[in-house]
Image (cartoon, rainbow, N blue to C red; front, side):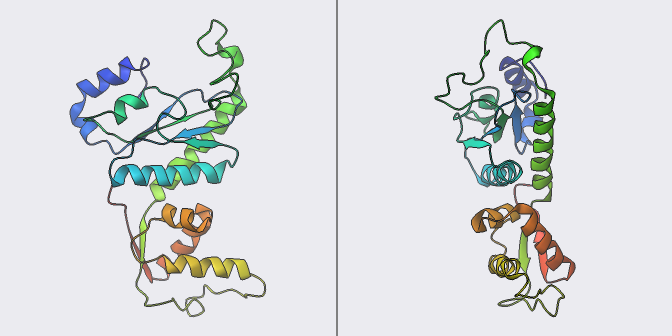
Length: 224
């Protein structure tokens, strides 16, 4: 959705209520071409859908760029995401920007709301980095699922062809055992990765291998 600030979202939500009622969530974008750190603002928390979006997108945000910063709702900026998160609407809407945090002398950026705010200060490299960052986050969201193991106790990884020499790959095997401990159908991929402080990709690759071996069956998140 592209529209004039605030009033555009207000009008769209009013005129497209049937569509809005089916919306699962989203990300509001602004200041994406500034040569500053990326910032992710969580949505208003209300229900499992909001929790899932925040967990998955935040984990992917941090995996892609460890220099970025994250804040709760209204902790980065206040813009169109307010309309979607508002009372009696409650569409979980995060925001992605490159705004400086509170306390910075040039928050959110040096020429904000001034006559000097023009395209001369836009950085193509920063914009492309934002695009790659968002694509990574969307990919994680599309791959999100809840895995459930069909094995009792620990899976026999050697029999499944998924074991490694512990003398050469001790950390990998330890991580795989930790991941298997959580495959009871109660956690999503992002929740497992966040809990174990592991990259989403590492968790997803191992679970995909277990799925291919037929000992893990995954369902999409209830919010979908």
